[in-house]
Image (cartoon, rainbow, N blue to C red; front, side, top):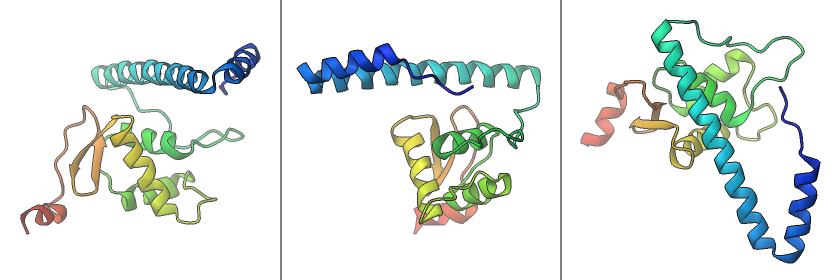
Length: 152
């Protein structure tokens, strides 16, 4: 389901921005953060139900005629399935599913940026090794390959 634009809310924000743009921007950003927090909580509940009931994960491939997930949402969906991913392994997985950033000049950097945002800003994933991430709540160990990076 595509989100609908709330036209009255847009008009209100435009009016507020003419009076005090900084306050309007802060208000919209705070509202977006609240909605993201609510979505994150719903995802955590869905993940818990999935783990408790051993239900199959959502379909990896998108249905014909629907838009494939992009950016952070595509990375998030793969991460929810568990495992440890690097930027390169994530790009490979996204490519298998047809979700890779097709318009990106540097696809690997684009995927790594999405993973970094999920880690640093959204705090939805954990770093378990140098350049290695897993979804919060999924136990994981860094690979032996990157453990050497910390001991050298």
